[in-house]
Length: 293
Ligand SMILES: Nc1ncnc2c1ncn2[C@@H]1O[C@H](COP(=O)(O)OP(=O)(O)OP(=O)(O)O)[C@@H](O)[C@H]1O
Ligand SMILES: [Mg+2]
Image 1 (cartoon, rainbow, N blue to C red):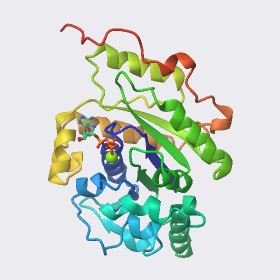
Image 2 (image 1 turned 90 degrees about the vertical axis):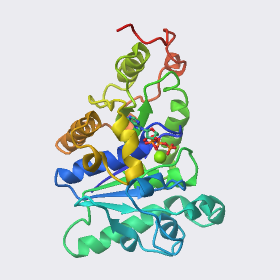
Image 3 (image 1 turned 30 degrees about the horizontal axis):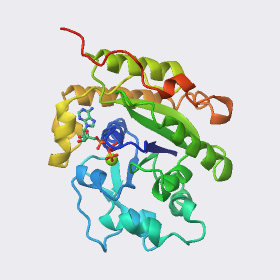
């Protein structure tokens, strides 16, 4: 079972949109996918048309030990695609768990219990679990990193894209050293990509130069249908299956599925230098003007 954390401490870079639509595309390709909402804003939950009451099983309930992971899983309108949703209660969880023993691995423990249950019945309970992280590097993101075995960074191809990347990679290394040796960054998804902008092309080029193994060939273009679909509680494949957004996420899913064939392709951090060179920390110096035409 692949367990992938979608992470970036920057807000609005496409984490939730990718969790929904990459997950749905992989479910359409026959995989059993569970997405987990770890953001107290609950965007993922809403995007999939759910609104949970405080007493319903949720990510919050799982983390505080009230709910089992299995009972927090609910169906979505897409076959094979399930959600562990959240309520706003999650916003208080860092304080609530401040002195809890082993608080960094609560999600992993809950997931392990669920997997043991599934394995007792003869199979893994899912093929993929995707964790949608909040835009911060606190306890919720750390729980995602310890529960995951892979990380996908989502990056918006804009001026400050690489800024803050060092901080994120430092946290990844720390979690790796202290809690989870086999954790690895196996993908970088370029989101909200506007190929008409020279700056966007340059940022994507920089990303590929620094992280040649990790950046997916398929970038996710800016597409209004992707921005509209959450308000209908639908994935892009329900809302606008012929749109460019749907096409991009289908192609991304194909690359993610292809990684199944070459599990060694994404080397662990120990063997790959993922820290961007100092020059990459500063955004590219070129003009931000769109090209004519
Ligand atoms: N490719 C895209 N084209 C157009 N709009 C997009 C695209 N990807 C995401 N959006 C929109 O941009 C906004 C931010 O995207 P999203 O919520 O996925 O980012 P996020 O990283 O999860 O943000 P946060 O950190 O706040 O959770 C949303 O309104 C979303 O609908
Ligand atoms: Mg989000």
